[in-house]
Image (cartoon, rainbow, N blue to C red; front, side, top):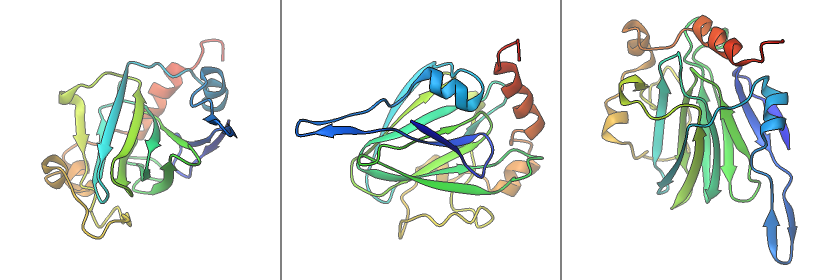
Length: 201
């Protein structure tokens, strides 16, 4: 299992070792010890979700108030998606930047994104099935979105005419969300991440 930090700090691409033979395949999707070694703290798991989308569907960009935020460990167990991590932390050196990772049922990569980062994805296949483990339970009052087609974000979604939910279609732009005080602050996110590290460090 290999961890590679993305250009957006606090986000990682995880590539497992897939063992296959005539019967099929086996892999370790998540290991708490490997995760803690790479990221610097354990991942507290409070909720696990499954999302099924048809090709061309775009979900996101979603984020939660920090603290406590909601870290996510994401994988695609059927079909394929383009997963997108966006730095929406005000004051971050990479604020407004994003990175894309293909998640599919062949390479079996995963993405981890820490608290305060924005997350979205585009389904490349019908019945694309995403599973993600979350560090906190769903709290609708603390959940927010930025419009995924905001030109300022400049995300080149691999869909001719993306299908959006009503919520995402009505979401504010990055600038509007910043001006209204919705976006998390980089300093608060860093402080929260530090609080998760073992006390002896």
